[in-house]
Length: 171
Image (cartoon, rainbow, N blue to C red; front, side, top):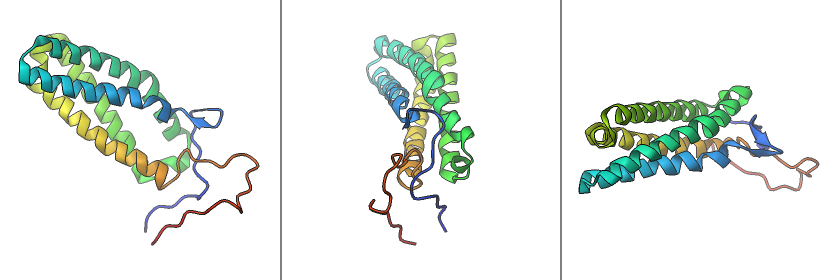
């Protein structure tokens, strides 16, 4: 039987007013990490060192954005609410994203020590491919948290819940 939580939603910890912070920050590291993969592919196909250098800088900015913003908000939500931790998709989402950040850090350090072009092939490209695949998986799990478990979805204070349409789930 699937895990179920209160239909009205599961509160998040990191929020501004009633709006969860994590969804505001995640587009930045996702876009940057996907761009690392794309510029690695461009370097692989053209040999133009510009693309390897672009990957290096994109990766650095992705680490700053994911470590300083999205990951902290995600950790606050995960650690700050037992209901969130009780959802297996939350564990998959968190562990997958932590793994992606660790791999991104490894890729950055590889490129830093070996040089942008030397670090890009083959290991930089391999790591950026794995990271993008992980992001697809963790994004799916993040969607599961919102759309199936209603994490971060809350009724407005004073809202008449009896007139609100109810979601139904087939068993």
